[in-house]
Length: 156
Image 1 (cartoon, rainbow, N blue to C red):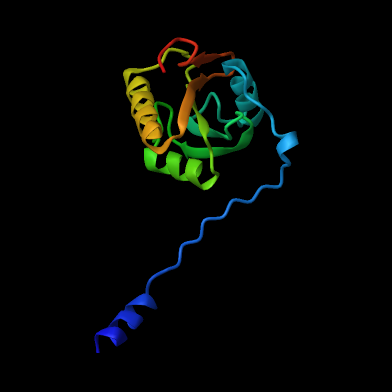
Image 2: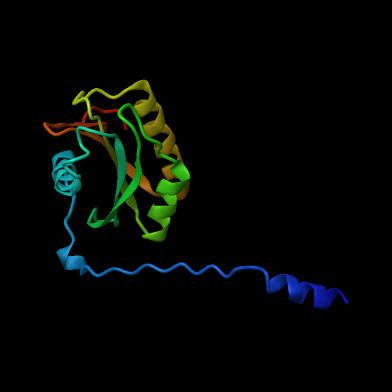
């Protein structure tokens, strides 16, 4: 009787499959060597209609050689903030088999200075990444006129 019940329970459990697919050859992936490279790539992909309108959070996913595997748009919020759920950041990093990530978000106001919340979030993400062996190499605040790099400022 117990075996029959176990089989019926198994029929209600979903199978999980992890798959990574890419259409970009490794030789064609851009490599991030500096915060400026990261900013330039992010600016190319940022929606011009949103950069000064609402705050967005994106994650640049990279392999061990810091070649870009993709950019994950995590969230879009309001004028004063957006949600950056660490679980979602690292789900994307794990699914893409990333070894390095760059966190990024824009400040619609144009202010390049990080808030206390920005600093706390960066510290939390770095700690989570350490546990998963995924290095947070930078957190870049993006505006239409420039950027702020946590790495360049010694905050990582």
